[in-house]
Amino acid sequence: MLLALALSLPLAAQAQRKRSKDINRGKNGMVKSVTVDNLPAYNNRFFRPGFYIALSNSRFLVEQSATYIQQSNLAANAINSPSGGVGFIGDIRLGPPSTPFHLRFAPGVSFLTRRVEFESLGGPNDTLNTQEVGTTQLELPLLLKYQSQRRRNTRVYFIGGVKPSRTVGTRLNDPLRNQVRLSKQDLTLEYGFGLDLFYPLFKFGPELRFSHGLRNLLTPRPDGYSQRLQSLKSNTVTLYLNIE
Image (cartoon, rainbow, N blue to C red; front, side, top):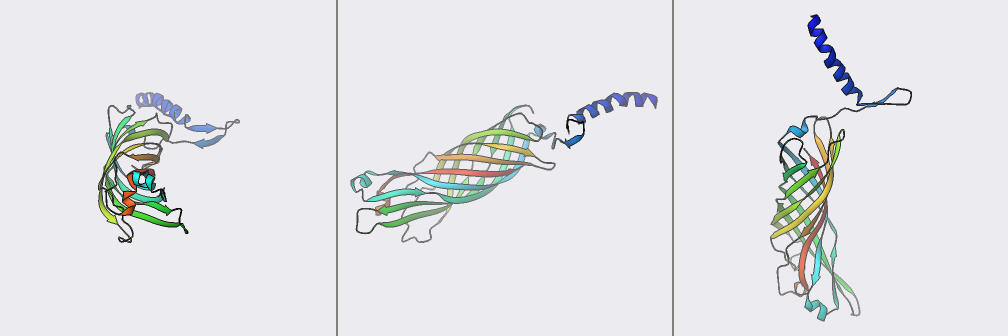
């Protein structure tokens, strides 16, 4: 009994010293707050599943054609439009628990609405005509994540990679009026940053990511609107709310 007590005293003292690091005291020694490390073994997990909700602002990057330059009475401008999406997260550690590098695969579905506004100039009455294309996108981003050392229950990270996507549905409110058509395949360059917040049962990660399209999405058509465009590339800013 005495031997067990003697062996337990150093362990108890060590545990007490460890707990004291989490105690924030005032000038007079009174305890102001106590910080507990949530999910302390989280870094030991090789695979980390989760899901996300995405809130985005999407638009086209418009390049106008030589036809527009010759007939400069029609101006084309991209309009920012709110969009959203949902998906799953698969995060894989690339090395020992101390490594800052992780590989993330986050398949999901986005519901995008993008608009191009054509303004007729030089006539007796200026007119506006908006070409709107709504699409449902299946997205398969492959990303590399670099994270900082954890400080208590927070850490920051940077993320980047590529995102192939395919259109699985197109929504046209007025097919006779909306003449612009898009390619079904797209490839975008992704980069951004985020913050990991550790809670007792899960990790919450708000993340801001920028997306730039690498492909021309415009499908050539004989209508007057498409002929005045040289290319349309996607451009999106997205706030991801990740839960793992």
